[in-house]
Length: 248
Image 1 (cartoon, rainbow, N blue to C red):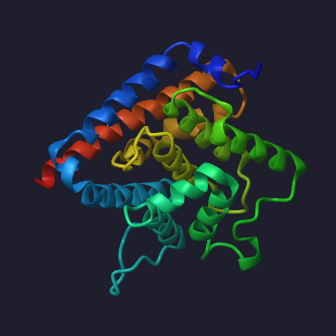
Image 2 (image 1 turned 60 degrees about the horizontal axis):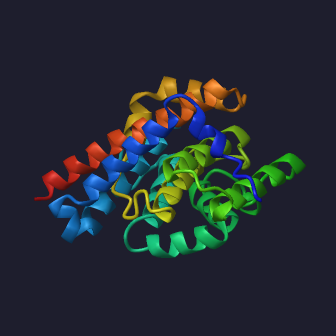
């Protein structure tokens, strides 16, 4: 009998409840009347807000130049990742992520870091044995080695990529993009309406501290990180509802 490696996380105080609340909030916003018929427009706005917030978390400037483009390479990369997850392309990205998650991560890194690293480093994790081993484990979890709620898996993938920092640059943007892809692939947020990045940006100090503690593997630290991620998903559903209300 195969043991689910993430199942013990559900026994940590507050984790199961936080995951359930995140799932309920996101399910409810998918039932919003606007999202029943026009989710493509609200999803595109969610991706845009998420990309800008993700880049701002890395210290990027959000200002546009005269050509209505971003001068900041981190912001440009985050927006490219966001565009890859918008309604026009999300089905393709989900299909790749479901069967070959490392290929998907490499593509996201190529988008996020195109203006940050040399071309030969794009999509290539650092050549260290522990990185390859942990990425392989993440790939197994994403492709079916665990049955924990999607919110928990998204938080674990997110936290592991931050802790591992497998690429030379752009790890934060990739980690948050991967969290979104888990949410879409596992049915938690199939249209990617939620905007958890807004909450992570508002609580940036807590986010950084919790992610650093997650890397220690301490059970309470794991619980705190997962709960923080679930709270951001729940708040991100409220952000999505505001987007839908504005689109009426």
